[in-house]
Amino acid sequence: MRCDNLSHLGCRFWIDRHAKICDNGGAGKLLFDIVNFLHFRVGLPFQKRSQIITHSYFETDGGRAAAGFKGTTGDCGTRALAIATDLTYQEAYDLINAYSKDEKPSKRRRGKSSSRTGVHKVTFDKVLADLGWEWTPTMKVGSGCTVHVKKDELPEGRLILRLSKHYAAFIDGELHDSFDSSRNGTRCVYGYWKKPESRELDPGAFLDKCEPLRRLFSSPEPRAIKSEYWKAQFKGIFS
Image (cartoon, rainbow, N blue to C red; front, side):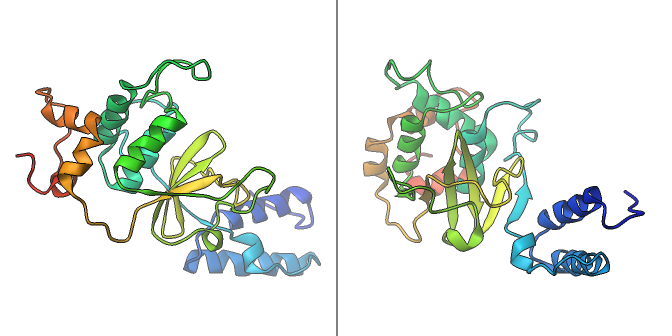
């Protein structure tokens, strides 16, 4: 885009928009300097870097295309689960569908959860709780929005954020999603699941409460998940 008149509103929008999508690395710093130089040329006030770059974003489909799936769909729960837990997309896909088979009919929920079209909150919570992840609410009734999708407002580590009608992985201050779901750092976080720093896992006790996963491992179907990740979790229970 050629800007003959740098004071034109469209040029300023283009400059600011492209500055906001940069990471905090060298490229982001360079573009920040360019933005401030152009603001100086047209008499606009200098901007602090924090006003331009609010978050880091890594675009990924969580392995969906690599697993052979085509097109786009409402799979944010499956994608976030695969990214944050280091499962393959197919493993996360099968796991959520296994849990959906145990769902009971409800007047508030339409149909059962699906890895492809969306997973109900109660089912997604059970999956992560059974995996040993810890839930932290960040928004209570009447509290208003207190935490946003921003590095300085969320802890380090591997997180799965619950947003409005969306789940997203957030790893060490960086959003991992198929699109920038942070709304430039302004989107409210209702709460997040976090992988514990250290956890002693009794595989037998884990499986007692994780019947869907037991069924997957017992299944003779070739798609049943038996990855290195799960073998490590179960410590030799399954061959």
